[in-house]
Length: 514
Image 1 (cartoon, helix red, strand yellow):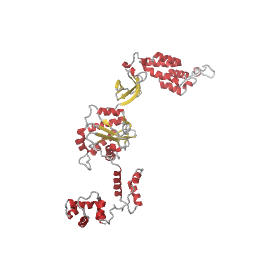
Image 2: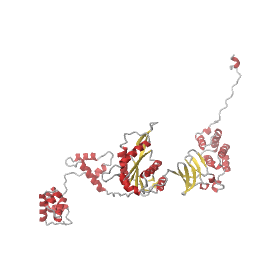
Image 3: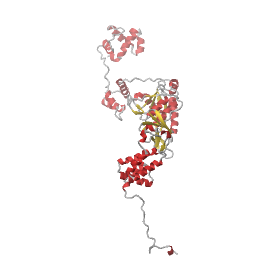
Image 4: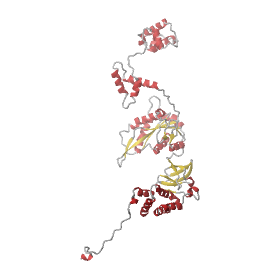
């Protein structure tokens, strides 16, 4: 029974301290917290068994205890009933199930052989650690910036209408120092996503080598474990700041553990403190966030000396790359096909490109003030952006005698229109005459003439007659007439009412009122 009273690993320690270190019994007792009588008994039994230091390699703790105490039970105590940890682990995945609930069920099942709640949680944590080994990530100074959005949103009340909008919280954390940036934006859309990156770089005063975002749609078009497809505008921002982007793998939160912890800290130390306040503008909310963010970055670490700001100044700031001369400005990117009239459309406005690109797919980059068109990574056109419907044509883009363009001419369009009816011809002539250059009307004329694929020529001619009479010169007007069957009505012209006779016995004239 002595082997149960004395931990098996302490028997080995007593022998080491006596035979190897040469300590006295009192010194061994002070070190191991074992009574002097028990130590003397262990040394006496060891001498009887002929044991010396070092012990044989094949003599483990259990075998050592049995050598000294042959009649004792050296097996681990079975006083407590071990929970079935795999079942506990699976139950915790269910919504609403907690460790507290499972512990209560465990105590009801084994009332006299159960662990306390703290032991239950500690032993479950130990079991969980043994199931899967995880490599602890080390981050070099200035290397990685982890990026994510917080889960909770913050309501903002419109002072004039009372409407409530929810603001998203952007969070960025540097890997080495844990220095944190946070701000509120109206959405998680692409303009806000990229704008938050720009402001984060300015907050840090430099650029990291690598961005590690979550697989948000604004940043990653197609999430993939091995080759994620980045949004073109996000790639453009990365090129502008000379940084690389490495999105976290889908369903692998440990890839961005720093962001997860940063989001948790922002939720606890910033959003939780602001939960009772009412905000009436985004600027007001960001002002409060910035003040609390300073407190968060200056809060001392629990297990390390210093705080985030001190570590940032010592580690990350010297290693960050300098910011470019000009900040990145958001540019929307869209792919379009050049129409027969050598124009591309963006936001209901038409912009010309060189005529030899007719039929090609080009990339439109739309900034706040400028529209640029690229073909095979070469800029082929640039226009001042217009925010209203219309057409912008550069004379240099117009063809003189080009094969692609010459397949359509005003004469060919009018011949086709005449074959459908005189009213169609009149409508096409009007369109060609309304534009500064006839080529600019080719698109809408072709759209009208191609309607014969869906409607008979007679109906198309009657619809054009209504449009000509009422001055309707947009293609959607013709389509509306045809779809509503208005062209099938007998006569839509104003009725001419017959004049009533002015001389009648029941009609009194001015002479009757003297």
